[in-house]
Length: 309
Image (cartoon, rainbow, N blue to C red; front, side, top):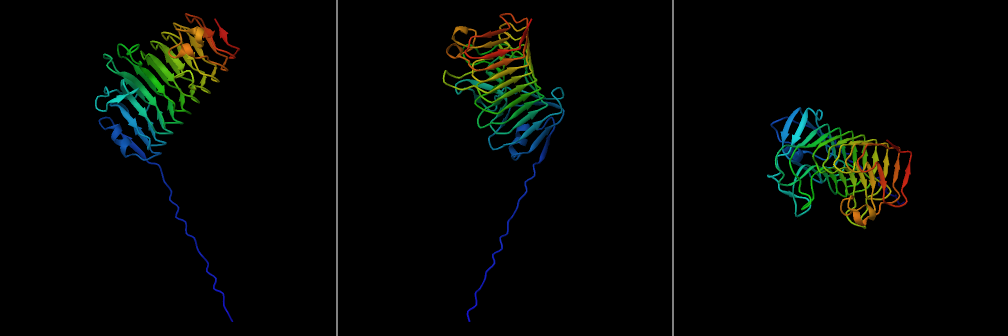
């Protein structure tokens, strides 16, 4: 008689649970050093006080959160960028206070300041660039007090620059001072909601195309207060964007300008070769903008239910 041997295999699964840590930084300590030892998904809490340094969040720090105790209590001031030379673009030296390469990063409740002094570099308050998708800037105050700008010989200062980094949310921040443009968006699928944007030397918010064939689309510009900027409050060069429910007043250019070839030179480069199409501009309140409240030089844009005084 033959006997069959039955072997029962038991599979053992090792399940590892990863818990995110909370790390703490106090004035006199170094934020960058803490970022360097943090793991993906960690939270870094900044205590009340002033930190003088420029920081970089590298691509491997995905999901990192950097949070202060409020923009009036926790402040990061530029150190001038001398210790870690950077360029944006490659030929232009840049002073970037928070430079973000990682996906899913949140920056919240922090004051971010370029202090008084002479301009020597391109000042950028917060910079999201690939692979920094799906990030968030929330409840911060971004401010510049420097004199001068690099334009027109090189790109000028930006409070917030989002360069090809999609899916970023910008909510409940205050942008003040003399950045050339406060919110500069050569990107798509960004949400800009409930921010206060005042007194840029040029543009409050601009959705810009890098070239005639580049895409800057499906951005949402909603319920912002945009006032006192040196040129247009909101300028749109891309397609399929939504501009809704904003209060845009007392800007020195147009309130909202939708770009096309005939809008040159008011639309910033490369605005003279772009035609903004299929944008939705609705339910905005527009008042006392020096060069007109709403100017449409594009094609097939949907404009409705805006109030103009």
